[in-house]
Length: 396
Image 1 (tube, rainbow, N blue to C red):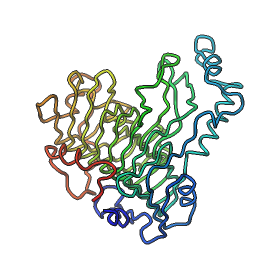
Image 2: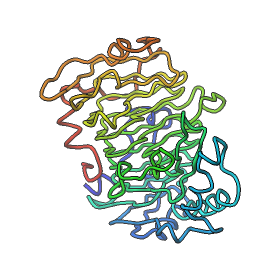
Image 3: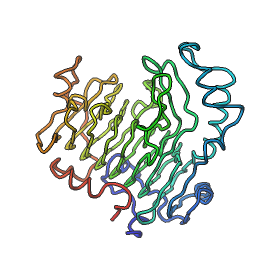
């Protein structure tokens, strides 16, 4: 199984990342074996093509106190920018400056850039990157496989009083950030917040203290990406495709395939899409808490989601109309899905469910038909296949 992991390149019809030149990562290049953060940093800085084998567990983060500078403290920050006294104005002044300076020190430690022609692959079933944000930035031809990503938490979330009706805390780090990059394949990874889940965070200014951002975010004009056979678990903002409503860098890009992934007790952005032609098929959605679940597919500005043969397993009390959320989109295609509530499985049309209780209606034609796939499984097969074989440790 290790040999398969090392030599694997994306098949010729496996989603958008197989378009054109395809995705081969570091195939044929120098092999680096890493077991520490410093070894990983050195390997990432080496010229490509290269294959980086991750062995065991690597913790890239430090205690939050190690990054503090400029006199920052959470108590002082909360006192300075309490909306009751500060108002709905962006934070400014000594505590915000100290927070930003402290955050910059953490960024330098945990946000690690991935260059072109690179494969990063976990060895066996125990490879783990904890407190690390892999940043695939302005790169081409990258493969990331067979790794458990855990808890890339932000020690210094920023208060944004203008985010939403009452403000929100925003954090900086994803587990994997894909920005301005092409031909990227993320496969058979597991994403988890570990012992530091979003659900356990405190509330400040009436909003959750958000120490995590995305698990796999694809933004800033990225293109030709396949996310396959991953397990996303116990997280809030899971997968963002397109980060702004400004079409200048994203229009005609953000072509992404999301297939055979397990979204387990994830709350939103499964994925949320702007602009891109995104094929979402054969994914297993498993959510049980009606109080926490927000939505699965976020239909954003000029998005073209083609969704087919997914299985939605919902807890009692979750309204199936909440599978979709309107973020400014107008239409999508949805076909062949199944809904399971309790032991009952029925055919499911998420667009009809949404349109029955919301206005305006979504149209039912995304305007394109995917061709880059090697076959779409019946939705009835998704539970067994995905629950058994998605995630790290399952290659081969």
